[in-house]
Amino acid sequence: MIILPRRYSQNGSGDGRYPIGRLLALLGLLLLTAGCGGNAPVARPDAPGPTNASATAAQSATPTAVLTLAPTKTLFPTATLTASPTIQPTPCPYAVLPTLKLAYLAIELGCPLNPGRDPLSTAYAPFAGGQMLWREDNAVIYALTNDGRWAQYDDLWREGDAEFTCGEPANPPTPVRGFGRVWCDQPAVRQGLGAATAAEIGDAGGQAQDFVNGMILAAPDGSLFVLVGETATWRRVWPND
Image (cartoon, one colour):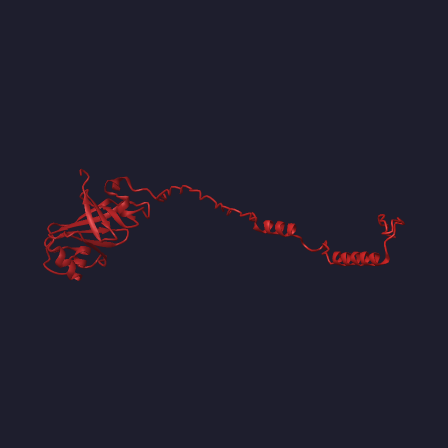
């Protein structure tokens, strides 16, 4: 019930009631007002408002921090330098004969192959172009020419053979026995050495020793002959040198 303020009628009576026409008009006005008010938008709790949109925009605009990991440094093992052991030369199995040490060069001949022969029967003969040597233990004759070259030949002469194999039977100029056999059978030797200049000399107390790269022989005249195998060269050493 709507209570209205008192109004006085035109006749001056104040019963506090409106005439019916005015009441209906007032009621219609209230209904109209209520209808307009019912169209007012109602806020939905699930719809984002301006405030939420602003916050979302602000959040999107804020740069996101990205964690970047620095590359890990890989450590490689450090190389350790180890000193190489010093290589010691292998000692020779045999010693050089004392009488031959004067002519021995290790860098030239290498190590001895045997203990050497002492004493040893040897022979020596001089020629115009060189000399000849003989060793009893291996029955080999060595022809040494003055150009520094040497060659070896088997001793094929035997006891009972002729003293002179060829040429004039006189010594000199013709060599005898084993030297004469090689000199006659080998034209290169005869041409390289030429005629004998003295009779051969024999010695039962000589020395000789074989090496990796040659040999040393003590001649009857006291000199030492070094024969180098690799280069086929020779040299002569005297005790007083």
